[in-house]
Image (cartoon, rainbow, N blue to C red; front, side):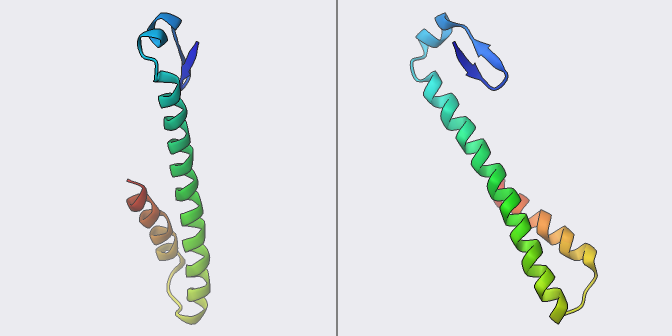
Length: 76
């Protein structure tokens, strides 16, 4: 049986589509890579903006807005 997300695919259907297991593994890897890049990008931007905020004082909510909006736009 091949798992696609939370559902299991019947053996008969998996036999009709021989690349289904490889596709599912690739899709899972791409999802995890995208999630990781979003989180690491947001954390990196927040750290850089924290360092910049010491030199150029501006409100904290702008740092949070930019740190989450920019990685979201990149991963879209």
